[in-house]
Length: 299
Image 1 (cartoon, rainbow, N blue to C red):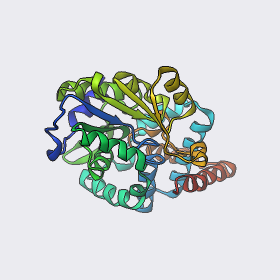
Image 2 (image 1 turned 90 degrees about the vertical axis):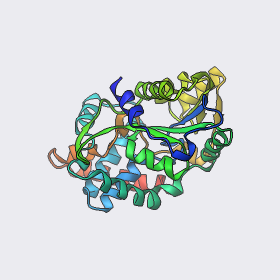
Image 3 (image 1 turned 120 degrees about the vertical axis):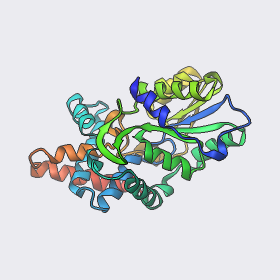
Image 4 (image 1 turned 135 degrees about the vertical axis):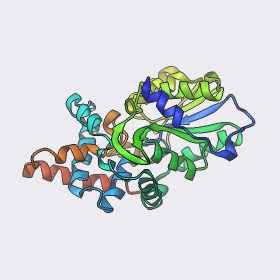
């Protein structure tokens, strides 16, 4: 419960959008592969690696793990625990303002061109109807809020990282905003903002977000994975797919697979760096993952 409550508590509303004509309805959009092609935290990681926050080898190992999650369809509990414990270690000791500024540069360089125009149009329809629109993601709340601001949305719910005196400690406040935690955050926000969830909509590509989709009156599957497409059809939910056939088959690698996108999920690479050096074959696989990821996330 702490993750959802913390995320809702820090969520800020754009001043110009604070008093919408339809105050009881809102729309909630997942980010990775729903609003943006690929994983936002991976694009952020690429930008940080280019700015020497950590090495490209770390990024390669992070990418390999993400590819493994997608191929296997499961998450390794030991690795997920390690990722949770190490989350945001890569920004520990850095000022929040510094990371936010870098995030703005990285968004312009690597993310702006990857926004799905179809999904952005759906969000605009809600705004035009006088409803508020929120992003809901496991990515750090600072990154989520930046994306929401650049898209002209109301605000964002993301994983909250701890900071003291404007400096990141390298720890999380509660759990990553993933799965059930997203639904908890939406409930907390709805209570704070006076939303009627039966009149709200939610959009996602993944079955990981079933708690969020099931919470609202109007769930929509966007660029859905096969399981979500099946569930959406069984339940009569709307389905929107803005990919070509080729993109639909490959979309999102390295995509956020569950807690693999924990806020600051790049800490996976940091944790791996602390281990002994990878064997040559592992390194080769990791680098192959990065090359594949670059190709798959290139529009």
